[in-house]
Image 1: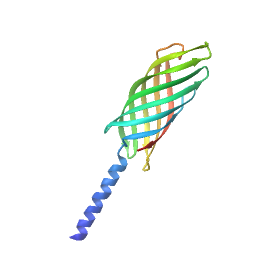
Image 2: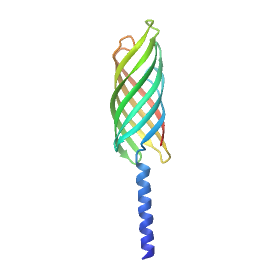
Image 3: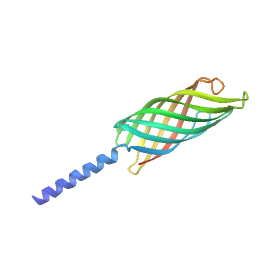
Image 4: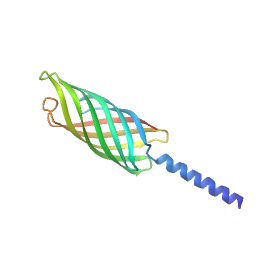
Length: 159
């Protein structure tokens, strides 16, 4: 009877550990690197809101052929488990920023609306790797023309 009880405790403990290993951490901090027509880097923070939704805040800069920009982005994301530690996510949001356009010799501020669609892998260590596409529509013609498909690789530490 003692062996059966001990086996039951070990089984339950292993089950709890495996469930916690697959849970999304309440916070993640890291970098998001990439852009559609140049180079961009962002400091990225994610905060869990509910079991499958989170807020992502990014502060970064873009360096493309003619436009340099600094921007802040806020996104509300929904996260769904695909298999094991692999998740996919989608989100909506927007942001604001400041730009310098060398092509037309103009600078100023801008607003934009953004969507987000991507895949992420949660390692057993506190690390997340993600690849996402963020379509952005700007509200200032001097900053960009039409739709910008921002594609980036993210690496974040979970805590």
